[in-house]
Structures are given as C-alpha cells and as structure tokens.
Length: 434
Image (cartoon, rainbow, N blue to C red; front, top):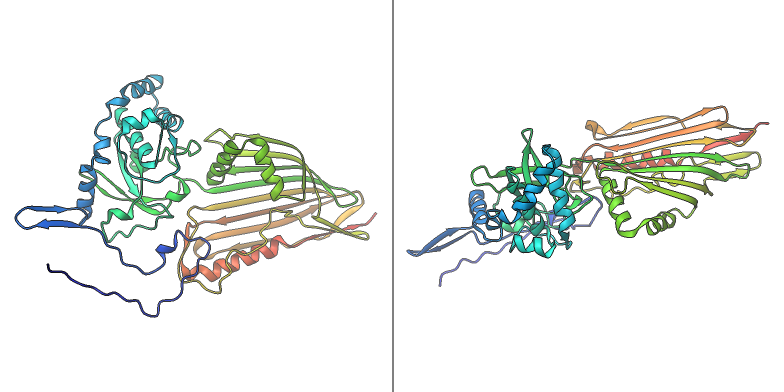
C-alpha cells in the first residue's frame, strides 16, 4: 500500500498567553487541519465531500440530517396556517413563528447544525441548536418565506478559514432570509433574543449560506449594541451619607443577559446578586420593568442609601461622583499584544449623577471636562462635571465603536482605558462656607 508521509515543524513561535477579548485560543496558534475531501476508488466510486465550497454545499443538502430535514415541512402545516390567519402583517407573522419555536421547544444548551428528525423534535419539545433552527427553517418555509440555513462556527469553536471548505470548521446553524435586500439571520434557541439578533457566541465574523443555487459566504454582524444607562439622583447628608434613587437600564446584549438572568433567578435572587456586587448599597426598594419585553430595555429602579463615596474631613467633603460605576482597573495588562482584540459587539456605557449638597456646602473644586477619542473613530469618552449653587452633576459616556481592534491599536486602546480610569477616580471637593 502506497502512502505519503509528511512532517511539519514550527520554529521560533512566540508563546501564547490567554488575554482578554479573544474568541478561543485555537484561533491564535499555528496549526494544520485535515478533513476527508474526496473518495476515489478507481473504476468504482468518486465522491467529493469538501474539495470546493460547492462540494460542501452539495454534501450538506444531500445529508439526511441537514438538507433532508428542510425538504419535508408538512408536519407544520396547521401551525403555519394558524399564524398566517392571525395576522396579515409580515413582521408580526415572523415574530409569531419565532415565538412559537422558542415557547414550544426548549434548547438543551448544545451547539449543533444537524437534526435527526424535525417532526420528533416538535413532539419531544426539546432539542439542540441544530434541531431548533432547522425546525424554524421548516416552519418559515411552510409559511411561504424564502428561507435557507446558514452554517457558522461559534466563538468558542473557532473562526472559519474561508480558504478551505472544511465542514469541521462549522458547528452551528441559523435561519436566513432576505429583508430589503439584506441577509436577516434568525436564531430561535433563546426566548429573550430579539428576532434578528444572534447569541453572543455566534458573533464570529462569517457564515455560509447553504442554497441549491446561490450558496455563498454571509457576513455576521451584531444588530444590537451592548448598551447600559445609569442615572443617580442623590442627596448628601451632613455626615456624608448618600440617599435617593438609582436607575439602570439594560439594552441590546446587556438587556438580553439581564432578562435571561432575571427569568431564571427570579426577582429576589436577581436583587441578591445586585446587593452582593454593591456591598456599599443599602437598597430599601427595588422595582423592575420590561423584563419580558423583547423590544424594550429592561429597567431597574432602586431607592437606596450609599456609604463610602463621600469622605469628610473637618469642614471639607470629598465626593466620588462615579460611585461604584466608574472604571477602576484596566483589563489590558500585557505590555504588548500580537493578535487582535475581539469584543464581539459595540459597547456604550452612560452614567449621569445629580447630587444635592448638604446645607452650607459648595463645590470648590471639580474635575475638568474631557473628551478622549481613539484613532479612526474607534471609540470615544466624554466626561463633564457641573456645579450650580447647591447641586453638582456628573456625566460620563464611554463608547467602543468597533467590534475588533488590530494588534497595532493595542497601545492606543490600553491608554484609552487608563485615561478613563484616571478621570473616573477624580473627586469633587466640597467646602462648608456657611
């Protein structure tokens, strides 16, 4: 039997250290992957599996656990008819179809891009990602939508190398349809995902559309930001205690995470988690809103007292206006970096605080306003403090405007964090003048 023997070696490769904002370690180390591409028995059988992307596409369409499961949709005919009869609006029908899947089939937490029997999954009411999202394709097709599967690789599985048509690169599937000429990707594994929003672990740059004639790469971009807004309205007592209200809203990916946790934990346990993370807060009342509304930011409103954010010394007080919400440590600790930083989504964090000073006190020293930007519009930090009579207000907004930063941008990004931390740690000096 003839065989070819290869030996591969890597020389002088730098050591890999796990750092923040990466996908998975295998994306950043040198490696060689193999997969069966073709079977060729002379005079008997020739079959291509993944020599080209067209071969990969055909292999999946011919696979009974993939293409075979999206050819037979009749078992969902009654469900499709009921959804269509309830509304003539295209978007309402789409939302209803996704809600039917998320409320009927429970996700078991596993990634997959195959389904052994779509009909049995509906009857069983539980399945992995492949089961659920291929059933979603079936339902949408039964409703006359032109829908096809897109395979992708989750962040924990590794990035797709577009130079090689290897099926092993993929481990997940979502539904894809065209909306106003653009790809609209849908995942039905999580009831708190807005329609068209993919789980964080799926935000991995690119997927591949499996289609009889128009198979192609599909860019995967986040449709939502990770957005948080906080507003404090507090009064400072003569002894330096803060009392008042604190509002926080969770939007986009932050909202998805907060709603998921709130649903699984319940109000009391969710509140316990907040108290544990804020030991200096004494919460007397907590109200939550929009925790089951996909299209609205979840809100948390607290009535509370705070300690340790004001230091009193004689007739002087020193206020930390960012409370516990400021940046305190830089996540980028390495001196330099050899690979990109991947955040997955855009980030926006806004804080505003309004403080009523104790009688007789005025602000005699406030931090200077600042606007700091990353090169090429990569991010922006704005900060300002204003003083008017017996009131002081602070405003902070941090924006990361790119999902990925090149290794060459590391120093700028690291210094960006340092300047935010420095500003967030500045204090307001109050003096009793009366």
